[in-house]
Structure formats: C-alpha cells, structure tokens
Amino acid sequence: MKKIYSIVALLCASVTLFAQTELVDFSKITLDSWGGSGAPVMTLDQDHQTISIQIIGTPGYQWGNQAKITLGNVAETGLDTAKEYKLSFTAVSDNADCGGVTLKFFDNNELFYTKDNYLSFSNTPFDYASEWIKPAESATNGTIVFDFGWDPAQTITISSLSFLERTEATGVEAIHASQSMQKMIIDGQVYILRDGVRYNALGAQVK
Image (tube, rainbow, N blue to C red; front, side, top):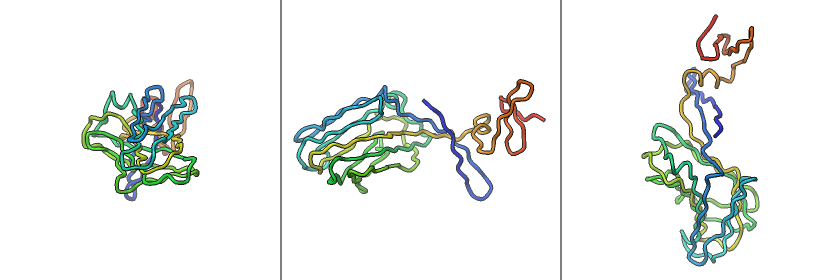
C-alpha cells in the first residue's frame, strides 16, 4: 500500500495534517454478479487496473443487474471508526443510455449509498468521488455494488478505482507531510527544514 499526505486548512491559522493510505489492492479483488434476466459478466484486467462489466440482461427493476467488487484486504481488516474513508472511480459506457445506477459500499450501515442520487454513465468518462466519511461501525464485508437494474445491454468500464483511508498525522509524519519542508544533508546526516526550523530524521528539533 502506498501512503500519501495532504494538508487541509481549518479556520484562519490552524492547519491539520492528514496521512492517507490507498486500500485498493488489485491482487485481492474478487468479482461477483447477479441478474434477474442474466447476471452481468465481469472481468478484471489487473495489469491495467480496470474492471469490465457487461450487462446481458434486459432492463427491469432496481437490483436486477448487480455487479459486485469485493476488496478482499478491506474485508479482512474492516474499517476503523476513528478514521475517514473516501471512494472514487472513473466509469465509461459504450452506450449513452446508462442511467439510474445505484451505488453501495457495504459496511454494517451501508457506508456509501446513492439510492436518492442515482448515477449516470455514458461514453464520456464519468468521475465519481464521495465525501470523506466516518463509518458508524468498524465491521465491513468490503463489497462495492453497482446496480444496473434499469439499463439495457452494454459494457461499462471502471478504472482509477480508489478507496482511501485517512487519519491525522502526528510527530514525524506531520513534519514530513508539510508542504514547506526541505530535505538537507549536512555532514552525512539527514535534516528536515520546515518553516525555518530544523529537525533531525527522528522529528526532534535541532539547532
């Protein structure tokens, strides 16, 4: 997993630093589907990190054509109620008529659910990004569900799938996350210069 950092400014002077971890591991993704008139056919291109969803059933009703993507590592570890999570992806369809798509990410309380704000895909890439959300409970089965119950036969491609976890960075993490930091090597020792103050590699301030 790779870790990245971001800075979020709060109020006028205070700054909160967050450490972010990408939780999508394509080597631990499993696919499943269900359809009242034919389950969607799903394939994972791990090299290009894309998921193809071929709808073969006829339009019917909500939950009629379900495509399920399970993040195995998330299912193993669960979600932490002290942390925040953000789901994002890019979707494109080979048919302009792909609307009324319902999205779910399951934990015990359905962490993300677009039932009242249906998504629409087309032959132009559609970028989705949720808000940062804290789960009410820590358990999860790690399954993302796309419901295409009202859509005709077509193929949808999901790319740039991301599920980020973030927590406040403290200590050395906060120093290394600062946008104003500079790395220096003096007499073979590594130092971090942040806002004119020098720190050693352990995060301790030095003169």
